[in-house]
Image (cartoon, rainbow, N blue to C red; front, top):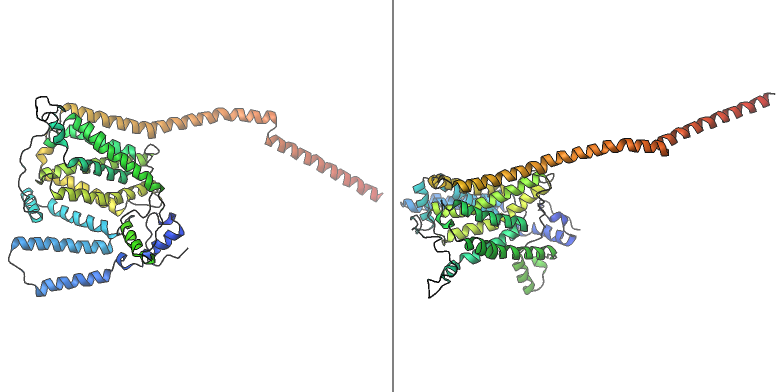
Length: 464
């Protein structure tokens, strides 16, 4: 096995791979495209700043200068992130990919967070001049008949109206979420829980008001369910797939090199997630936290569109989902490692920490920009259902990890106390090791006395 070059950072999963892959992993540190190039980036950045300061004339356009300042700040932030921030457990296609995405989104979020509501909505015009305009009122829900006999031309018009671009988006989204979570039960719980959230919050956001068959048939069974099923099949294939990698420069043919470049966007290795939430309290709380953060991120998608005046079909909505797809898998791997092996992973990973901060910041933006919508009173029946669900979770947690364990320990202690006298009597009756030891000691003592008596008799005979 080849030695790892100095400065090579071990990533999660490298310790369990074979010698061939370890040699390939070590060769990654020798590839110029995968090194940080800190001095080179610093030199180029300094030259750009010197040019802007000394040679370029600053225009007198406030809007243009604001855009330039924002872009320059993001670029400097990205340069620092890609050269100095730690790499996550994923190295494909490049370890600096998630660092750049997270740093840029975090910068824009903090900018919007500290603006006024009016300035924040107008700030979106710097990204797209079409934004910053209040969204028109739309009618959601309405006629929920699957077959409408009153419409002679197209009685299934309600069904066809739901067949838009969001149907494949739902399927693809849950397919990718399954690859991130890697557990069927957790995916189904999140899918069903979000439908209950839509029922509970439809008095705040009109687009949560959907027909019953749109909730449970189109979403849960067809789009989400089919995406989860295909994702689980892909997980089974990825777990059985052999991972043998070869360096690009060691491949002799051009066809092989092109194929190797395409495979750079596939996983380097694969690990199966075994969450086991009922095994101990740490895992149970971790799974509850993951479900909560997933549901909060899903709600942020709809509330951010509402408070920032972004239409559902805008490309920024899609870019946000692409961002979470890229960084969510890294964050989930770091959370699983932190939960599964706390002795080795003593703190939460960087990417998971930042993704959690981004999700919470999104929710705080919603709270700041439209608190009146969030403060609309929840129907009493809905509150009763949620309080009942939370109460049942608390009761089950107390029973499973506290009351049940105390009861089992008490029963085990009582059983041992009852078996102890019986075992002691059995040992005394059948000849215990202690009795055998005593008998052996008595035999040794008697044999010792006989030997002493024999030796004294022989001594008297010699004297006589």
